[in-house]
Length: 164
Image 1 (cartoon, rainbow, N blue to C red):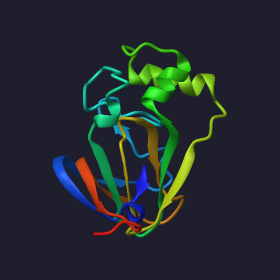
Image 2: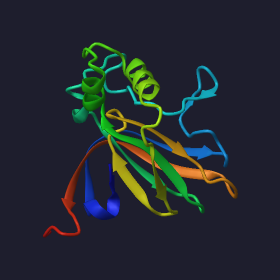
Image 3: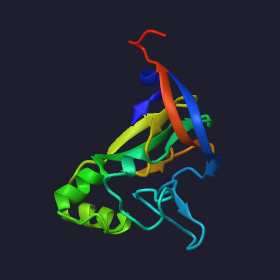
């Protein structure tokens, strides 16, 4: 995961899809399963290869560029371990599903820290949501949370400490 400011200019090499999310403040999370009508909570996205762990290939999955379009802060909640690291720590075979792997990790390590990254209005971040346990969180009061998400493959053109 990287704040856009640290990466410099990002170029989209291939776009999968985009979405604008509107979420009420004080929500339990921002990921929502429309089939079940419930918030998902901490999870690993599974769009790249449905149903499989493929733990050694998740780092190659498309990423997400998230931008806070709202007028209040929002948060990215993330566990600082990749799917491969989690599977290795659990001793799980590569065929285990990401849902089971996430549940097992959080069950076995309930005190493992979940980082809360504050995203101010106009700020954004880039991460691979198919390789990280994560969720979003809204502010606790004020207007509705508004975010833009662009899913795809990106490349950093130049960062703060890089030459253009």
